[in-house]
Structures are given as C-alpha cells and as structure tokens.
Length: 229
Image 1 (cartoon, rainbow, N blue to C red):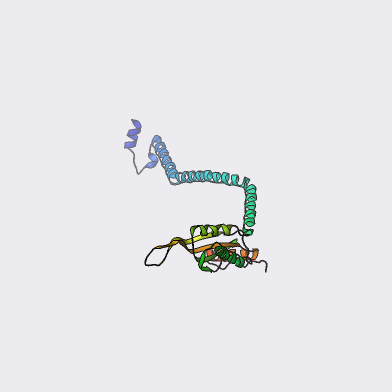
Image 2 (image 1 turned 45 degrees about the horizontal axis):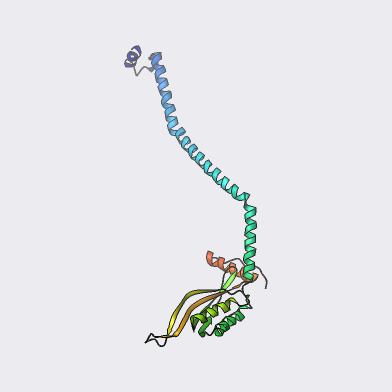
C-alpha cells in the first residue's frame, strides 16, 4: 500500500525527490521497455534471417549429396557414353557414303523396276545435313499390285548397303481406270508421297553440319571448325 501511496503522490517536477522504491521501479520499467524494443526491432529480424539461412543450408546439403552421388558414378557414366557414341558411329558407317548415294538411288529405282512397279515419278530432292547424317527426300509415285510393292520393299532390304527409307505423307490408294468412273483398275495400287533415305557424314561434313546447326539454334555466327579437306 505504501508503494501505491508513494506512486500517487509523485511530484513530476521533483524527480530527484522520489522515494527510492519508485526510482528502482521506473528504472526497471525503462530497462524492460528498451530490451523489448531492441528485441522487436533487431533480434526478431535476426531470428528470421537465421531461420532462412538454416533452411537454405538444408537445401544446399541436399544438393551437395545429390551432386556427390552423381560425381561418384561420373567416370562410369562417361565410359558408357563413349561406348554408345562409338556404337552409333559404327552403325552410321553402315549407311551409304556420299560417293555411294547416286548409285544407291539408281539401285532403288532399278529395284522398283525389277519388282514390276511402274514408276511415274522418282525425283530426289536436296540433302538436309544433321549432326552425324544427312537425309535425302525423294518424291515418288509408283503403280503396282500389293505383291509387287512387297517385292520392292524386300529388294531394297537386300541391297548390299544398309538402306533406310522412311515415309512422309505417303498414301496408298487403288488405281482407277479414269477419274470419273472411279472403277478400280485390276487391283492396281498407287503409292505416292515422299520417302527419305539417309547417308553418313564424313568427319569434315559432320563438323560443318554441327556448326551450321549451332548457328541456326543460337542465331549467331558459329565458330569455324577445322577438318579434313
């Protein structure tokens, strides 16, 4: 009660004359207030930063563990990649070369003739170089029976070189005696569209193709690459 009475009878103009207990109380109150403001304005922000740093530390530890696991197997993976690239080169070497391509086109045309197909159109287009190979489109229109087309495909597969033909926008429709009647012409079929055949690129051609593809992808001039002449 004495403390409350002293508190009610304080003279604000004579702080030095306040009772000792009142001075201690207000000193402690100011100290607590300063500590609270310091914690609120500074320490709480530091705690938030600490929590964010701890979360980032856990994330970095996880990334480190993942990268460490990959690095342990890096040598084995690199060896597998080298082996796969060697296998790919060996397979590509089984495709026709640049000098063999004209003869190959003749062989394909002759195979169609030997199978009894009537070739109304056989028009090779310009090559399109890729990284390791080049593709050559051929527009064609052939007429024959189902068995003749089967013999043609079998004959192409029997050529000395590995020949890959992929079909693009190709249609196989019955041949009619005339456009108006729509009457089938003795079981004949019409194969028309575009097929693509492929050849492997020499080392210098492959380097040029990669440089051209890089230039096209980046929209910037590609660095010149040395190679065989």
